[in-house]
Length: 102
Image (cartoon, rainbow, N blue to C red):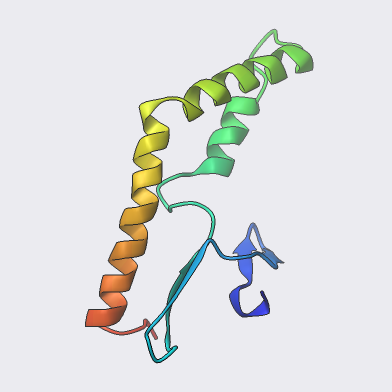
């Protein structure tokens, strides 16, 4: 896990990568962790979790849970899931054609 530390919000985490790709000669190509770049999960959740005027903390939490569940069942989640695959394929294609970024 130390080979693929995950940095987020100024902190570093040991995280098991979702996927790591190597050539048949075991030369590292790319690794993908957690979420596609177009899915701003933390920013979105923070905004959705914020209390609205007149809401109690419990009401805000209940609304957030309803809205979050609805978001997960909406077409946006499918779009973000597809974006993860697109991001992986694009990165692999770039590594094979251009090479690793310096």
